[in-house]
Amino acid sequence: MYDLVLLHPPTVYDFRKEMLFTGPISDVVPSSPVFEMYPIGLTSIGDFLERYGLKVKIINIANRMLLNPKFDVEKKIRKIKTKAFGIDLHWLPHAHGSVELAKIIKKYHPDTPVMFGGLSSTYFHKELIQYPFIDFVLRGDTTEKLILLLLNKLEGKETDSFSDIPNLTWKKGTDYHYNDMTYVPDSLDEFDFPGYRYIIRSVFKYFNLLDPLPYKGWLQYPNTAILTSKGCTYNCLICGGSKDAYELNCNRKKLVMRSPKKMLEDIAFIQRFTRAPIFLLNDIRQGGKEYVEEFLAGLEKMKVKNEIVFEIFNYADEEFFKRLHKSIPKYSIELTLESADEDIRKYNGKLPCSNEKVIEMLQAALKHNCAKIDLFFMTGIPNQDYESAMRNVDFCEIIHKRCDGNQRISYFVAPLSPFLDPGSPAFEHPEKYGYKKFCHKFEDFREAMRQPSWKNMLSYETNSMTRAEIVRATYDSALKLNGFKYKNNLITKDVHDEVAVKIDKSLEFLQRLDRIILLPKSKQKQEMEKIKEEVDQINRHSICGKNELKWEVKKLFADFPSLTYIGLELLVKDIIKGVKCRVGKIDRNIVFTGESQNSSMEK
Image (cartoon, rainbow, N blue to C red; front, side, top):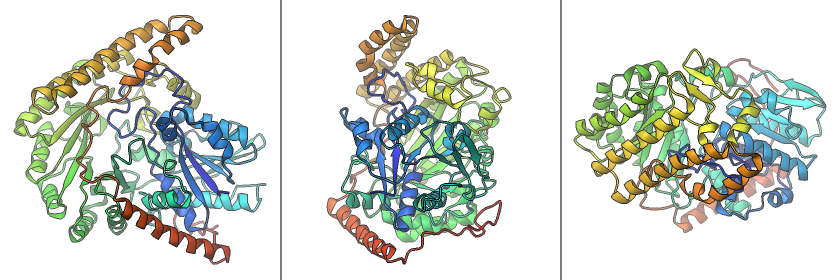
């Protein structure tokens, strides 16, 4: 019997049966269009609760469905014995799959509580709690302690009122309750955001390798990541993780960083089981110069073995890259420019420096031994028309020439899709910031995810392009970029030809689907079934090569002896902890003292 089972849903349930032309919406992320990569917070929740002697299991339902077309979701859920279920709804594309999983849970476990969490859950909590198969919504960006409080109450059968749990949305009969969001922790160090200790331990503890895998192919290509902060000092219009969005959605009024000490500990642990690159999520420079220096000095002393990948949110001078080179044998950077037009970048708040400064920054990174630079452009942003989208590729040509044709720079274009982020300035004030919204309520997004074409999934159009024009600009600029890459030997002829064929087929499918949706409903289904297999073949890597985003990994997941040693080591610690819990030496009561930015409550 588990205390909590956390399920990660697919985008659409059941995507294996429905014809969905998702296009390029996931081409520049590790997961597939099913978005099977679960948020990093799930592992932190599992790790935190198990410190208090609870048994917590993560089941990546989306990934299990991808790995095995015959995987029986209902059979899996029916056999689970747990005191509570948790479902993440962090990214809005899971609007459909998350609710459908909750329905299945209640079908087989009508008396077992179901809780939701994540940024999208937080934003739409008042709508979610009205579904009969959702009992609780944990709001905010850090819910580990809140879940422990809730599980303690459920364990003690104290179900008359949950009014003393911060950030909780709950119901009693037909009465809905929205507790104040007063828990906003100003330290992240007690939480294990990479959560790899938990994942490895759970494989050995629960004798199941497949359930907790982060995404399809992770064992062959194991990206690892460390969350460096919550909140943001920037306020990009389209970002659900922007300064305004965090304050509106999570009541987080200031940035909070994980300490350099904790991040160094995480890197040291990851090095024990893989040589895969380690991605630092969010720009570490938000923590200030002293923070950056402490972290880099620690890396220098550690003699880090893995490649470290840094996100860059704004202009970085040569001294920064010089310092990275001194600290780390191998590092890379990721840079989302969005647009080659300086005015558009400035308007959106993304890298509001000149193009000359951008080129200067890239030259400095290359000069100081940056191993790889990923440069991302987007379609579907405010004030961007078709010509502007095409100019992105022209700017790639300029960068390539100014950087002496250096092949360490990789260029990508992708759509801002399928939805505007809830809580972002553009979502809250669409007309002010150049958008027209088609989806407003939660059910609108659930319905949008089931549209047969990604063109019709888009929840917006801009002041400069319709949905159809955004789609066309995406494919045309991707085709132009594909030619640029081949001409400059950045990709092989095989990759170029494959991408060109996929773009051509994508445009053909769009036209066919436009004709199909004009047919009667019964006829629509028949015609869509005919093209489903073809569509599935081009739903992944339709605008870039499947290996273009990958870093070189000489050693895959781990030497199995090393992995086994780590797993057994963690399991022994867990057994000792379990014994202490049974004899009453671990107190499951949580005390809040001065952790909130908004109150100094104690529970």
